[in-house]
Image 1 (tube, helix red, strand yellow):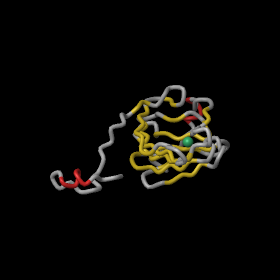
Image 2 (tube, rainbow, N blue to C red):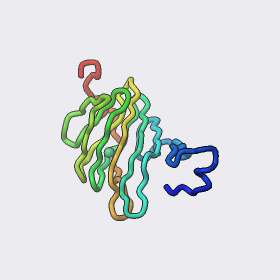
Image 3 (cartoon, rainbow, N blue to C red):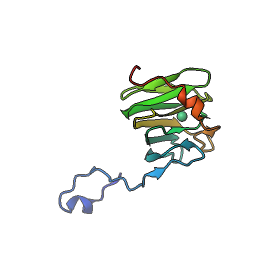
Image 4 (cartoon, helix red, strand yellow):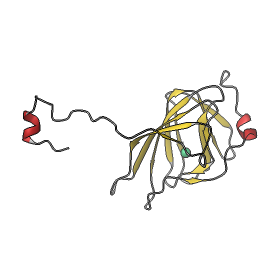
Length: 153
Ligand code: MN
């Protein structure tokens, strides 16, 4: 950021004070999510910068639909207990501090455990058209019910 001489002279503000986030929390669209999900933008692509990062809050039982990311995605769990699955693999229980990388084009979903909130940071690079994901079918109740007990995992 640039700092003008006049701003430095006004009340002794430090040159790099923090910036309040004025971007509203948005609800995850029902085309892409099952259940109530709330998304806070952390970083958005701009110009040549392709980083997209979000803090995604899943209420109990909420999850993404099946989807892929053109350049892959890393999620980092910050709160609660969640679930993640790659196509053809088992549903895995994920907890704070866990980090999961989904390969480019790999079909997967992620979300909260049935009776727990879960928040993760989601980080990816959009493609050259700005596309972060390609969305497919919702995770059915039968698919979701195959999750292991989070008390045991
Ligand atoms: Mn994903």
